[in-house]
Image (tube, rainbow, N blue to C red; front, top):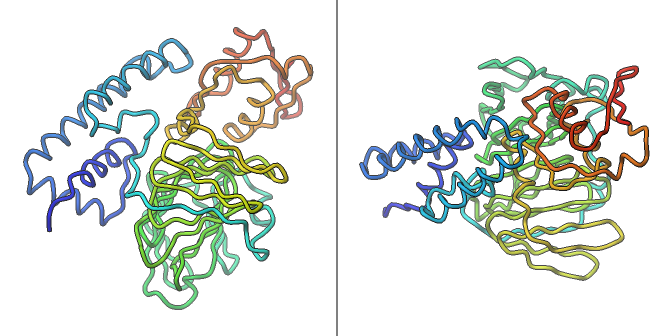
Length: 382
């Protein structure tokens, strides 16, 4: 079989930047590196360049807007010089899987309604937890290489990721489980078909341990970036509170945080959005936003919206009213704006999830004059 070099370069990017690929792709990559010395050389060079890039001082101080812009420009130059090294592109934080057509449909009645954390998880929704279809709750806060659950399924919870294996494809493996990622965290899960789902903070995912039938269906409320495994015979369907994305194999971002709104950003492939008897074709590098009772809007993909995968949220002249919707998800704190005039003030900079919230609040005060204080566990901005 002829070597698919584009596919191998893609896997190189995924492994170096995201640090995770499924077992099948890992084996494919290792076989190619052993058989083709020139690919091994490219891979080692990619690792070296990424190590240098990620250790640059400006990367450690992304709240400095000038430094961030400088790094972005540098990455764009590298991308032009070496098209294959798309790992350094802020747009393609994770290289996309082979592109196929994506379709978005309204939800079926049986799937309608906003997906919420399970009731027994909601009382402790600051904990990373998995609720099995039988009601059993697994605490995923602490890493553990092997967790055996009812039915014999083996869970592996390590490196901020969940993977699993089942004894067979029968029994209750197709029952829907519920994974809740609390505010302040992000997490990723590898599904049984090899699809990788990167979950942002305050996000719920419902999925089966095994896909049966002619489709692969999961349910999302929050935000996720998906690398869908190819399967021409079984489309992958991602249900959201206001629509569904049907995929055969591609990479895209879905955001459903705001009630009545769904935004799909396409990295590679094609999307057809159907609503109110109107169909819109989406091309790579475009995004489509659906607002309930208002229809759809087609825009260019905003690469800043994908930075959450690397723990960054870039703000570009963003009003405080919007920023205060991000802070609860990223830091797990309720936020109230005391002075309505502050809500209209705008800020340009970057939120780093790994840094204390006070670092960001100090930057807000320095640039906008908005002060902050805590009262009864609530962050007030004035």
